[in-house]
Image 1: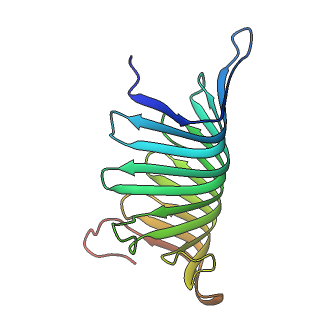
Image 2: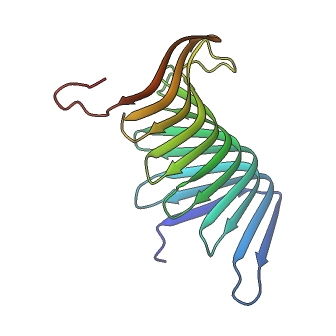
Length: 194
């Protein structure tokens, strides 16, 4: 009754409840075309996760997903999409890690103002901090974008604040500009230092 989250199992071909003996952790495993929806009544956010398999550790509040994952986070100011192969998610603060991931952020009604992020590892820390390792950023949705920024690390720090380390601006496959470090502040104080 004290929980502010409502978890709905939209679909699953198979469900297993696993419980270890002697105060072990209890888990629920869903497999086969799984879709789970989580609504947070406090923030008004709704999360929808679809995957081949989802395991929920109820004692540790950890959700694990494997295989063809589609993760959608609906907020008042829009939706964020993540695609990937593996996901570990802490259900208390929604921090976690994506492997072989792709993200789409800031999509308007036309989708033309969306940014696409691809990375080997995507880490979510706290409420609005994302870290991409070996990432690619572009507003072009192609498998091989016409233009992109590739970086060893990309930080999205909430709002419109972001930073990159070892970034290369490329047109097609041709690198044009290298920046060892770049930081773009979210708010203008007196002027933008960039």
